[in-house]
Amino acid sequence: MLQDLEEILTQKYGASITEEEGKKLKEDLDPILWNTFGIAVYQEQLMFLVQAMAWFSLAEADMLRRGIGKKIKTEIDRIKWLFVIKAEEFRDYRPETSTWIYEKLIEPAASYSFNKSHSVAYGLISYQTAWLKAHYPIEFNAALLRSEEENPEKLAQFISEMQIQGYRILPPHINESFTHVSAIDNTIRLWFLSIKGV
Image (cartoon, rainbow, N blue to C red; front, side):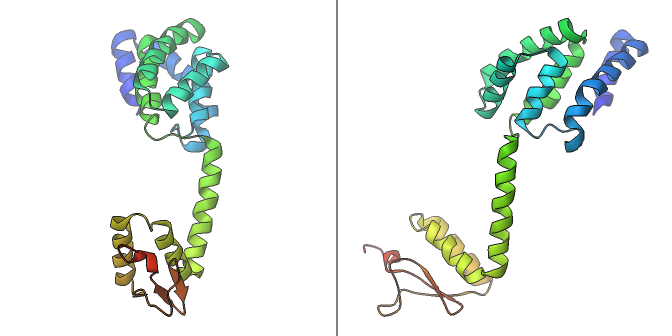
């Protein structure tokens, strides 16, 4: 990916400037992006990046995080020009370098990056969900249906998927159904409220 930037810099400034820019980028980016293999995954990485390259204050870096978190395009564009100017003043980066870093590393991250502390919570919830689905599949699927009781389209989709997977799904029964969906003896019993108009 950096080869594109190297070609741009070599054509405009020559090999020595390109090498100098590469060294500065390595100094600034490696400590921040080493554990995510050179990709900015977390919003905190973007904050550290703009601080390392352009000496953004904590408040300015947080403005970038907020703009990215809420996907405010005007804010992201406004910060771009501030970043390019400050990167040149602080670390003597060429405008092409800082613009390229912003457009190829920071702006794309606006569509997928998230807060690092959220990744821990997402990871834990994913692990727990997978464990429950593996060890208690009937109860898991019953809970899944319970969570979508108010959404008939999703409910129909989940029920048909469960039937394809081989689960027995029984209709509401006057003597065996409860107010909500239930898992009974390796079957899923639909609830009274699933009857339209009840």
